[in-house]
Length: 231
Length: 308
Image (cartoon, rainbow over all chains, first blue to last red; front, top):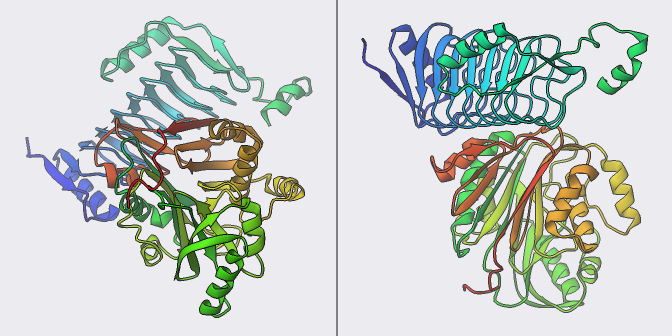
């Protein structure tokens, strides 16, 4: 096992930091990112397996476009953590800002605390596990994948989602347009058990499931009222 | 984009809040290179109020200063005064309504930028480092403050259009805003019909007028911020502060960022955590509220003029 490399963020540009991170990952070393000070764009576009620990808070878009790396943020994360991720795992010990796991296609984002608005917006695959609460319009226009919210969800949950599934442990302020409750299946339960096994979170005891009502997939004149509401 | 930052100390109110806010604004400078400003709340002047007046840019500064003082002299007693860049700071003793003061001073390029017993509000075109040429922000001690770095998107770049905005008419009340107020025209017409005067075409100014109008009609600071969530339209995260209160409000869609960190001693708010970490280090957990939220913190009133 090669020794871990520390990449200190103080007095370095984002480009220098990310170059150092990618270089260390390419050498097969674990990376400790020290003194991050909530800088933006840390550990973006790491396109291979590797282990990156950010020892503090990260700013916007941490781990964006990640393809294979395991990234641990020992603090909070700003907007768009893991945006566009293809594979790998990102764990946020604290809270995440708006649009956590936006547009991810694969991999897992774990937020142990709360997410602000629009977590999982336009997800195209992958998994988002939220330990705490999730804010306004979580899962907005989601297309595939799964979101699990341990706590409560804000207004307009799953608004205009195409496909994919959201599981909810707590209460919801309101469902979004064309979002409906569905039954949790045995297959769902197996998937959830697997998903939580390595997450560091406890699988909520009782989960409700929210999916697309599919009324907005195709335009039907009889659905005009629903369309007016959605648009 | 604009950068907004606020810091609120819960303790005795004798903290290096100016230096801390400057650091926060420095971290946010890239969000707004056009202009910068701070509204700071300290122990205040021993007697009277501080009044900052913008003088015309295109006239002799000496003559303009004399005109400002002459106009002030018709309604208040001026205890002391000095000029710094395009601003005159006067310590005044006022017995008249605020409207009499502003009405007397504000003609042909003169504008009252702020008024208050504890409020010092300075702003200028350029990055935050220039603020110290106007006021010793670096050495300013107090309980709380808010600051702004501006990226102009729809209105011109000059001192008047810079933020913070004083909530014109109400002493010791200021606000900073990031976003766009889309019902600005309608609100502005309404307030102009009520007699409020606007000095800019910056949509953020209407938030200051909104708060001033609401509080002068008897609503509390907290009630005002709550009502603004529905009365203002568009994207907004704004901070506001009075002599003893500090708060934020955020639009229903959560369109502009707002990060908060609260410890036992201090509340720090900014639209990027990087600004908060620049003053708090790793203390406290960062949290971003969802949309349609406001929050107010209060402190017990300080004795005005308690410190020299």
